[in-house]
Image (cartoon, rainbow, N blue to C red; front, side, top):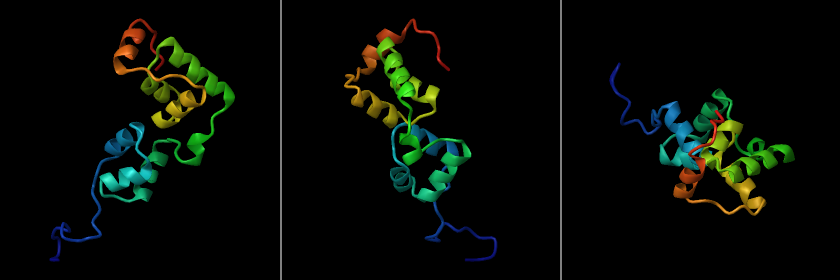
Length: 124
């Protein structure tokens, strides 16, 4: 490599994917490991971005109080989309879906959610 040259050929040069792309992938339900694999970066890079933005992940993500779980179920049954609920509680979408599953709540289709959620007040 020449001085000031490109490091593109360097196998240690990990993808320079931006933080927002990593956050969106995480909020869409991908694990840190799968995000790292998809965007050719490291798991520590992904978790560093999550920490930077104060997002819970891993075991910390799975800890929710019974009160919060009931609120999640209640909002979902009122017609709010799981994606809105996860943003409101700052949880991963997968966590919200697991909570609904634990309470034996049938998931809606996107079309059903749109129809139910038209007149709901904004949470965020």
